[in-house]
Length: 131
Image (tube, rainbow, N blue to C red):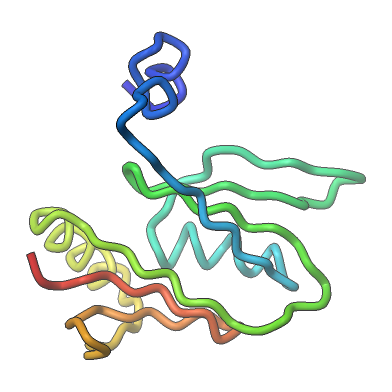
């Protein structure tokens, strides 16, 4: 059962008073490139999008319970870093998927051991290695 169905039935994250969740919003100057990067490189799935005049303005992607919102902004103010912790078995699956797709990544050590995937615009997606 997905989050949207669970929320409609009163069982999802929004219905639990003891749970807090976030949806990071990343601003993109090249929405089409960012959408392709999230789907083909980061192995996310599209959840929803908002279009105006046939242009995508907001695009939400997810991988399991990790949700990211991309928002078009023609004047980016800098780069961002998305730091994600996966359960140990999910790290193994994620690495298998990015290796199968020949997605370039690097091992990085910035307080934690992570796998880092660099985006075209300088943004970084980091997955925590330790359990």
